[in-house]
Image (cartoon, rainbow, N blue to C red; front, side, top):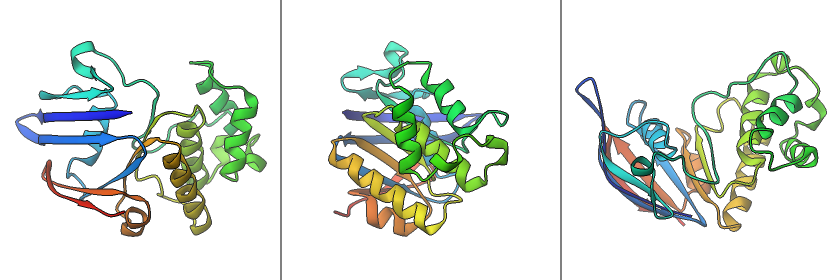
Length: 214
């Protein structure tokens, strides 16, 4: 998995949200994105996912220009903004419904990721009765369950207790070893320090610093 971002700019109502972003990202690494609220992290993630068309520039994933071909990047899963689920369904039922879209995995794979995230005991509980931390973990389970090659997580540790934070960190480090390309935005510096191979700082829609951590 490889991403090449060239001269990426996004303007909304005469406000520049992303300003001439240039990046090269490759599999087997975790990239940590930092910056204050409104710095452009979420918008950048959304353009990499193919959700929002840039004003100019390109996002090329494995040789495919997403916006020239009007495609979403293949084998990519993302958690951007707060997870949204059907509250009248159980955690398992929500994941099974989502998995039925591509029909790539079976019930065992869903149960395995629920177990890994310590949610298996709650899999038959209605999501409406989940805590915020449980909903967050269910969102992470959704991202991971189909074994994507690119994982994009925007503030994945929100609402998680310390034990779950450590669990998710270990899962992501294991996914990196499998050659996955992982992008994480977090305001928690410890998460970035522990996980990221490179740290990319944004401010005012611009990249202001790139540092190698590991």
